[in-house]
Length: 615
Image 1 (tube, rainbow, N blue to C red):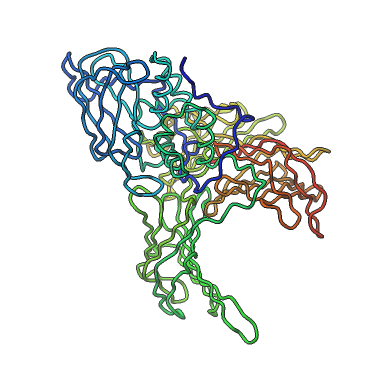
Image 2: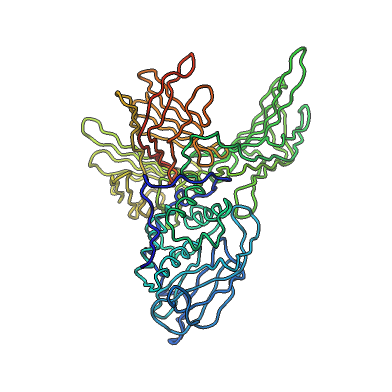
C-alpha cells in the first residue's frame, strides 16, 4: 500500500522548527491558474515533425534551479525502483533541458536524473546535486512526443507512488495532488507536465522550488527531503521554510543580518555619504518598494550628545521604475532634498534574483542644488523584496490583447445598500496598468483600464465580463472583454476577500472586511479592520514567528496586546500562528493584556481565525 503525503488538518499541524532564514518566494504566495491538471506529463500534439512510429520522444527539463549536466534516463518501473533501461541516457543542457528518445512503448515509465549542478536560489552558489539525491518523475507514454518535468516536487510524488511496489498512473496523479496541497499550489498546476520558469514573475512552480531551497538551507538534506513520505515531517519543514507556524511564546525572533556598502558624492553637501554597515532597509506595499540607506553619527553639542542622521531613500513602482529619491541631512539647514521624476537612478540585482540591491546614482539632481553620484548596495537576509513575494490572494492571470499579465495587487469590495449589492474589483497588473470592474445589483458590469501612461480604455455595455461571489472571494471571467482603443481582456481568475472573526468574549469581537499586508525587511505586518473602522487586529511576524499583536476596540476605547518574549508586563503571544498560505492568522486561546496609561492590566483570552485578502 502506497504512503500518501496527506496534508494535515490545521488543528494537527506540528509546530515548525525555528527558521534560520525566511523564504523569499513562497509557493502559496505566487499562485497561478495553469491548464493541464492531472499526473504523468503531457502528450505533445504539435511542435515540429512527428517522431518515427517506433520512437517516443520525451522532452522537458530537470529543475531545482535548472540542473546542468544531469544524466537523465528512462526505465520501466520495477517494484519500488527502476527496472529495464529504455533507450540511451542523455545529459541536460545549461538551462536544465533534455531530449530523450526511447522505443515506442506504452504505459508507465520512470524518468530519473542523477548528478549535475544548479545555482541555489537561497545562497546564490552553484551547487552539485549529491549522488543520493535522485530526481524523478513518472510518465504514462502512448507514443509520439511527450513533455515531462523532473523536479523535487515530482520526485516526492513519484517516490510515494513507488513505495508500495505497484505504481500506477492513478496513484501518481493522487500523489501529485497531495504535493500541490502540501505546497499551497493551485490544483490546475500540472507538476509533471509544466516546466518551471525560474526567474519569471509569478511562476508558482518556481516559487515552490525556492521554498525547497529554504528547506535545505534550514538543515534538511535534499536527499532526505526527496525520500520523505512522512506527512508530518514534510509539513513541518514546509511550514518553517514558508514562514508558517510561529507559535510565539519564546524570545523575540532575532533581527536579520543586514549589510550596506558604497559611497555617494554629494554635490553641495557637507560631506560624501557612506552608509553605516547595517544602515539599509527595504519596505514593500501593494504598489511600491522603498529602499533606504542611513548613517547615524553621535556628535557633541555643548554638554549634550546628539545623534545626527543622514539618509538616502528611493521608491520604485512594481515594475521597478524609480518614482522618488530623497536625501536627508538633519545637520543641514534645509535638511531634505528630493527628486520626483527623471532622477537618473538605476536599481539592479544579480541575474535571476532581487537582491542584493545595487542603486546607481548618475548625477542625480535634487532640489536645493544637491546632486548624487556613485552607488550603494544593500542586503537583508530573509527580506521581502517585491509585491509578488507577498501573501497572494489572486489565482490567475489577465490576458491583455492575448498577452498574459500577472496581477501584482488586487482588491475586491462587496457592499449592500437597501438590499442592492454593489461589487467593485481593482486589479493592478505588472505592466503598470490597473483594471477596474464595477457592478450594481443585477445590472451589467462595466470595465475600465488605466495604463501606466494615464490613458483610459473603457467599456460600459456588452462588456462580456461576469463577477461571481464564491467561498472566500470572487471569480471574475473576462470573455474577450472589449475596451476602447481596440483592447480586449481575457481569462478567468479568483480574487480573495477578507474573512474571519476574532473574539474575546463579553461582546468583544472583530469581524473585519478589509485587510492589508506590508513588509519591513523580513517582518510582515497584518492589519484587519472592521466596516466602521472602529475595531482592528494587528499582528507582526518575523521569519514566520510572531513578534507582536494587538486587538483594538475603538468604540470601547480598549486595546489588548502581547509581545514575543514578554517584557513590560505583556504576555508572550503564545498561541498565534501564521498558516502556510501566509494569509491565515490563527489565535488559539491567546492571552492579551489590556493596555492602559499606567501599563498593562488584566488579561483576556482571544480565539479565532482571520484571512487577509493578500495580493
